[in-house]
Length: 110
Length: 367
Image 1: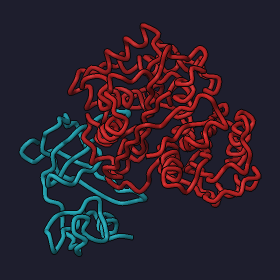
Image 2: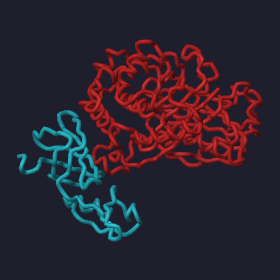
Image 3: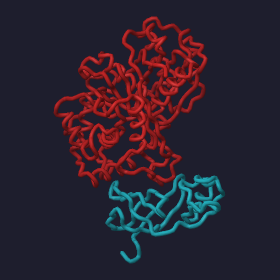
């Protein structure tokens, strides 16, 4: 299991940042995809921005972008009206065969 | 550069039958030999197999069972554009002088393991292609005002065209059925989707020196473009298929044509939204205009785009799809497409792509 997966299993969304070029590698990798440097793992910087969304059986799914780099799909909790460009946070995350992310609104929007 | 042509081609009937992958490959290979004049097993320098099936050494198995002892023999896997990747590999062997005649055989089963890219963690739990297709659709609607009715025209046109394709999976759907088909997501109906199926297709490529032995009407591959932007869906711009745009630009330059010169095209309508985006990224129409363009094609019975029915109308046996697209354009440019024929077609195009267009292939072909 990779660092990304094992941290996700503990409820932590981490990404690898290169110790050489300081860029974030996404999707997760064993080395920096930009310069092949080694990665150190840290928590994702929030908030994220909703890129696009749709829904299935009343459950909204979306692409959210973090740090202008990391784009990931997850669900949006509650009755949040999802709008591209809106700021959003990670409410929960886990890993079970695949990553699972639930996003929710910024506290100020609650 | 050598001139390289499609000398012969065939496509078996698509179905949802539980047929072994080997049988599918053998049947397409047998058909090519039966349909190609003067073709002897000794002529074939390369045998390439296109499939996502998790089986080993298939090209050598096909070669042995067909009595071929080729110099070059291997499989090619690149999800849904395995077929055109195989054709380009065959082209390259001939261009490099390592082969004069190359046989490409593509096949897939309805239960192919290539339908979902598990590797892509950026999709989170939303691995199935219906989710990326929904994202593309919503983004296109949002930016260009594309309607559900315009999307339904893609599917209706391709189902209508497939009625004249004897190899198509035999399932016709009307505009009304498509509009009222089951909602899979808010932005995708069941009949916006192509259907995974069982089928095979083959093409024989030959150098200019070799091709006249097999045909009096070779169809030349004059432009090739390929681009891979990533493997992760979420890196896509959601209203542009950048890999298709890049591949098209390469193919147009190599073939010295403008998009307006294309007479007929087979494009990768895995979902109805894909056909609209591809038409725009091939610059056959301006951005945001594809919905209206496809409705006009439907209402005028034009077969210019996806005359065999594309993936939605014919079915989508992944490894065979790109090969079947090349076979259809060769057939069109030979003038042998019967009821599907686009009159006077001289320049044709194939666009084939994988995993939400994270990679694309574009071929230009000429009679």
